[in-house]
Amino acid sequence: MKLKNRGMIFRDESLAIDYLSRISYFRLMYFWVDMLDRDTDDFIEGVCFENVVERYEFDKSLRQILFNAIETLEVGLRTKIITKLSLATGTGLWYLDENLFENKEYHRDFVLDLKFEFARSTDPFARDFIIDHRDWVENSFEGDNPDAWMAFETATFGTLSKMYKNLKAQSPQRSAIATDFGLYSSKELSSWLEAISVLRNVIAHHSRLWYRIFAKRPVSIKGHRDKWLNHEMTENQRKRAFGVISCLLYLCNAIDPNNTLKRDIIQLFDSHPNVPIYMLGFTGDWKQSLLWK
Image (cartoon, rainbow, N blue to C red; front, side):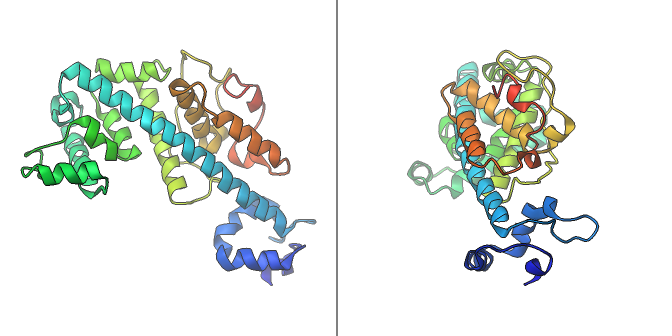
């Protein structure tokens, strides 16, 4: 076996055969990237396949924890957007009004994406609306359209994020939503939502968080209305999972102070003391920050 020839130890070969029969070599290889001798590309002394398995299962558990937390954020964001814009405009069809948005082309794409997602939904409320409204037209602003509280129920997190970003910069509702999430700036919230949308896509496609560098990095906030890091994140923390996970935790705290995200993550870390979490950007004195304390 190639891995054994490169110095990897197999304490239980049946376990290795089982994993490698259902999880590809390529999928596992990034979990041992720091276990290699840079000069020879062989494994450093003492590396066991079981170490790789533990990292893989750790990453899987972390992704499951984060996906549950993203649900809390997604439902909360959807609710805040619908409530504030519907009350401010006095109509559930406000999302059709291009005057509320900065970029009219982006707005048109958003509405068509929203209607596409609604049309593809298998939820009874979506199917019943389309059947009951003969003037429903999927690829147009025209015809009968569902109120926001119904249409947004089938919207993806990415669609919600893009819509929020395109709200007019001076919109009181855009600012009010950011304030509800404990941020002074709607630009900061928009940046965070974009980063979390990328995180959600990574998790939804069952991709790894381990050793991943995120192209979309959340901005550091300039002020806060609630507990946050008592120092700015390092660039390494921002580009790794730590940055976006911290933002997710902050926003979940604003929605539900009794959420269990921090507790679940700490418990996972404590149950795997040999897993080097610095590979996820959890470096330095991160545990001493106000957010994680």
